[in-house]
Amino acid sequence: QVYLGESGGDLVQAGGSPRLSCAASGDTICISTMAWYRQAPGKEREWVAEISNRAGTNYGDSVKGRFAISRDNAKNTLYLQMNNLKPEDTAVYYCKAEPISPCTVGPRQLWLFDSWGQGTQVTVSS
Image (cartoon, rainbow, N blue to C red; front, side, top):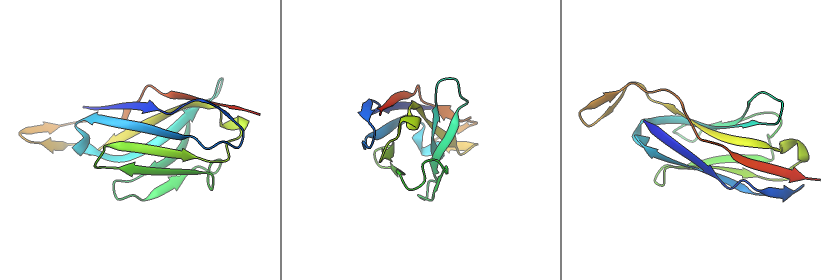
């Protein structure tokens, strides 16, 4: 199993540039693509960006050119650099890890599902 924990959320002014982190633990060798999602009050969860295990990236239209996703596999950590924040970026931000499944770890063969963190709140004031 993979466990995720986000940090870095805060109350920031419009135009600010915080960085979110997502630390992974557990069977991290089984992680393939990682992604950030966000959910604003009263809205559905929205895909923000993703990065493959070979560092290929994709972004949602609403954040393209302002946000940058990266990962440090040695530290088992996913990042989201957020630049030029707008009030409409206010949301709870979640990280997700998609697994290689099945995944062989030593003598174990694991059948895994997507893992999610608990979320971190980002509030942008105008």
